[in-house]
Image (cartoon, rainbow, N blue to C red; front, top):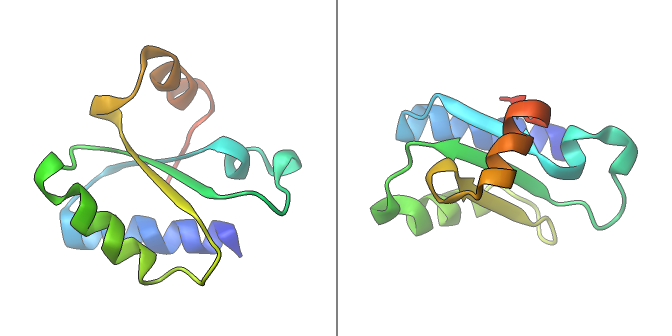
Length: 92
């Protein structure tokens, strides 16, 4: 279910915000780590700061209650996170 929701979020990010670099990271990128506390971790490149919170609000509208989403911009990510995205991220 969470993978489908992540795909739905990616679709909105592409269609509504024109983003093309969208990555799934965290436990959803490693199915053996999924548990009852798993959330959706998405990294995007090119999302302007001015629309970040509006975008996050729009994505939460399609998520069921209790499902958490971390929306991370590559521009604000640490070097370690960028390395993890490059090595382990799944492009959506």
